[in-house]
Image (tube, rainbow, N blue to C red; front, side, top):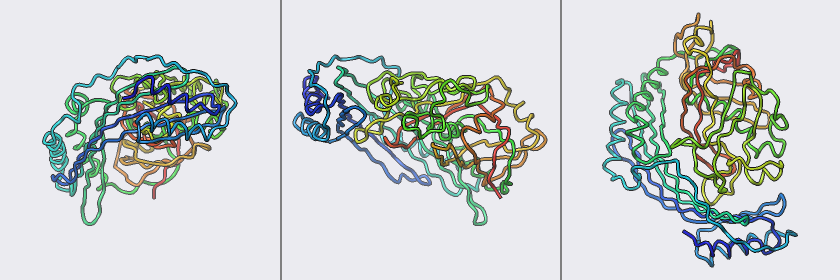
Length: 460
């Protein structure tokens, strides 16, 4: 994509005015998609994005310039713009890049861009049929396929010259159930850092379609959830979105470095119940949030955030690591070359515990069982959150009872961590896209089944 000598020239130009660090990030991305509504292909597309970003530091000041002109002259011109925005005092130094070869842990068998459109359309039609077979009340099914492969090259003034190839595949299913003017929907969206083989080896799109459809039908016949404080059992998989949003963002250096986190300055302190261990792991082969290297060229890591309730680590990128006096944890990520990187999560989950899932339910005399979580919002400074429950059930006398809809969970991250008193044995992950200042990136959320002793449940 770019020669070493050209990269060296670009980095020298970027440091011309006294910056003390420069980085070049080049990307060539090919993406494809197809959507289907009620058995008919609605859209099919292929897109290519190609460009580069140049970043210059002077102390704690950072300048970022990006361009889609990756010719030597175009890159030099962008480096000059970045340099002109910096007035540093560093002594100019020569740059000699050394290629760093990274081990690839993500085996790809079938590149999605090479798969013919007819196979992709059949996969989506099979999802449509599977969802509609669940119930005659399924009134609409939307299914879509998205995939991309990205080749990146990263060079910096410390001599790093490395690259990576990332391949992602994912299917989305949204089923709508309707009756007497009322409608409810169910969603599933499995994917992985894999080629098209993911749909025959790791994910089952038709089963995901059935799950989405059954959720829509169940919620169509559910009564409104009662409001109040009560124990809540949150199931595994996408239930981990609560930890991701309410706690994970507050453990990113982008918040911690500026004191904009409720967990700033709390390393070594108890911030969760002793049964809670939480991990952010970018090293799991072929998982949706994994990487070989982060978007600053650092090897990815397995990072224990919380161990038996004690805060052990933050997720740190290069620039915020400067502010904190802490090395990078391989957590620098960006959506694409148009964004400067910052600290982001990868595969973030509450680790498996020792409690039996059936016992967790049985130990809860009355409360709410949140089987599937939806979207929500959080303030990372205070940790206050509000999340929708996509599929919920009342628990009565230690047994799962009737379905309820319209439930939401309201609380504060630091409080919910301390109120977890049961952690199940079966940790599952689910896929999502996380948006922040460096764009939208693939992340996994996960957890086993957990119980929170009491939390505010919004309802009617």
